[in-house]
Structures are given as C-alpha cells and as structure tokens.
Length: 404
Image (cartoon, rainbow, N blue to C red; front, top):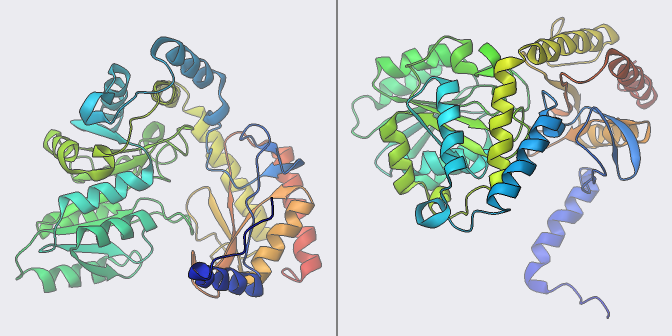
C-alpha cells in the first residue's frame, strides 16, 4: 500500500516542523528498551541516564513491582469506569487516605496525571469573575488551567514576592476571588519557589494559596513531603498538588487540602469526572512507594549527596549551571546553559553518541537564548557513573566549543 500524500488542510503543521528542522531543534522520540535505571538502553544503545524524573529509583523497585502484581491478581487490570460512576475501588480510597496522612492534610484526591491535577483544579475552583496571580515560570499545566478557568490572569516576575504583593494591592478593591500559585520547584531551572513568603502574603490579602509540588514531592521536606513541609507552612497552603509520576515512580497526580476542597473537586473537576480511574496496580505501587519514603530516608540523603557532588564538579569544569560561582539550581534538576537552541540540541545528540543521555531543551519550553541540557540526578547513580558522565560532558563540550 502506498503512503497517502499529506492533505493540504494540515500544511501549516508541516511548515512548523520544517521550521524546527531549519532551527536544529526538531527531535525524534528516543525509545527506552529496558528499565528506567541509572544505566539503561535507549534505541539499543547503553547510556548513563541523566534525563529521568525517577529521583529515588522507585520506578523499578522490586517492592513496587510485587505490589502491582499482587493488586492485579486481586482486582484485575482495570477499574472499568470513571470514579463517579463505578470506578472507585477500595484501593483508590486507601491510596488517597495514605497521601493525606503523609501530607498532613484532611483529604486527598488522585488524578490521572500531574497535568490534569493542576489543570482540573485551577479551572474548577475559579471563574471568569476571579483573578489568578501566577509566577511567570509556572508549569504549562497551571497556565492551561488558568486559561480554562476564564479568570483574569496576572503574571508576577519569577519568585518576585514584592511584585506579587503589588498585584494583590491593585486587585484588592475588586470583587472576585484571588488565587496565588507557584511551583514548589521549577522544572527547568531547579530553583525552589518562595512558598513561605507567598503563603503569608496570600493570607494577608485573603487570597487562596496553591503550590504545585511535582518536582518537590519525594525531594524536599521530611521524607520527601514537599515544599510546604520544607518551609514549615502546614495549614498555610490551601491547595497542594503533587505527582505520582516522578519520585514516587508510578503514574498520576494528586491534590491535597481540606475535606470540602476534595469533595468539591469530586463534583466539579472535569478530568476527575470524565477519565477512567487508575488501574489497581498503579494505586498499589504508589502505596508501596510512600511506605518506602517513610522507612528509607537514606534514599533522599543519597539523592542530595549525588546532586551536590555532580553540580560542584560541573562548576569546577567551567559549565554554566545557572549561576556564576554556585549553582542557581537548588535541587537535583541541573540546567547546563548552552544558549542557542541548535547548539544545545547538537550537544545533547553528541553526548548520546558517547553514552550519556542528557536531554536538550530549547524554545519555546525555555526562552530564546537560554537553551540548555536539563540533567537530573537520582539516588541510585553510583559515583563511578557520575564521574564517567562528567568526563564525557567535559570532553564533548570542549570538542564542540561549549567549554574553552
């Protein structure tokens, strides 16, 4: 059978792809052949993996695997329905109760992804008469949720608490609810949001406070409880969003807060209402992961030890990791700033050829001129693997003229 010619109705998509190719930022998906591990195989090639969100190595922990298998044998492979019809299983409720206890809140609801948790919550708790104050570098899921809410969106400069307060002062005389929202950890630069200062500011002005802790869950706070715990702001943040897809090692997102917030989301959050619930295996694996967080804090200590060592060595070698003499990043997310998009993608491809998986990130994910590699350390990388990756990074960067 011959391949059909592209329809002219979609010619604008081809034009965009041609532009990406011309800029050198077009990419093809790399395919993982085995487990999401510190050393694994993509497209048949063995690489040191510095691109995964599997911060604590739980995605392939045998205890999560066994929990998933046992739940599948007991409950089957799927739930068969959305939560509000016939798809709420006992294991879903047990997971939500476990997360609520872990996060020190009244209640929790699990969504199909971190993206839908953010977008579904923001879009459902506000309306067109309300206002959203959002950090300029907040995640795309927050931005999409804000747009769907039809609330007026006010963007404050990155981590600029004074600018946020200025906007709150301007909005104070106007009717409508106000929501202040920030990432707990920003996904491209790895810096920590000023959750403590923004929460106090929101309280002062009677605004709702919301934090997206996708990259803080399992990384910051006691046993990985996130940025709210990191800053000691329990009771000061109305809406906490987290993910089950990164440090927890499985799939999904969750929202934590008051019982009324969660009951409201049961009734109004569209992704919850119109998506089939998680397979039992996923819920069981997530519960096993939270047990490990509670019982093995040394995993997080290893994560931070690897992070500090690797970032320090990158600085010693002369890489730009977002700061001058110290990393601007405050977490295992480690940007290596290259600048021009084509150069960043070429650097990424050359590293892959040399056995290091390091994702290139370019516009529009990051601003023009700030293309970078985004490297992520895990607790499971060995010092030998990190040293080998550092040697490869330096050698390839000097060959490409990124390091002089």
